[in-house]
Image 1 (cartoon, rainbow, N blue to C red):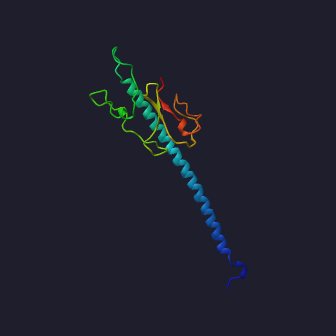
Image 2: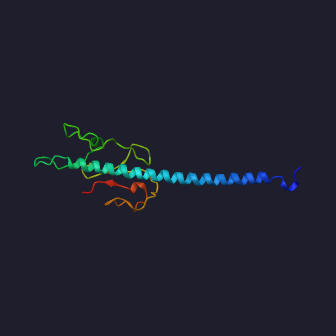
Image 3: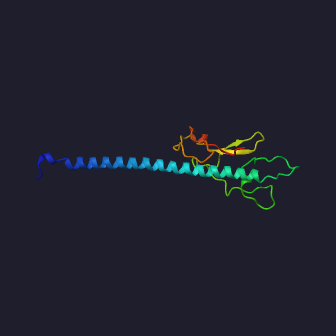
Length: 155
């Protein structure tokens, strides 16, 4: 028979082990969540830059004759997929990417005075993790939310 002082020691040890396992699982979940947010941020940067490049190519492909109207940006994002101004299909963008942070196909559109789209930004109000180390000409470091990460064509 066991001495009376040993009763409950195994139970207490098991409770300590379970508490340590719960703390480890919570820490792993937090790290996984941060890694997932960083991945979505990286995807947002890729997609935003792709849209900006497509808008630049769209404007550069505009007819530049003396009798042509001044170049204009597209009124919707669809002309970036297949530019209707040309007989031979010109594709400035492979697909209309969804917002990686919201998962929705909707973007907030930045328009010029004539109503053309000059940029996009996310609709997410979450606070960015990345604060520095952006590409040249990208002023995204002072953003308070992802809505402030505007990917627009510079005139």
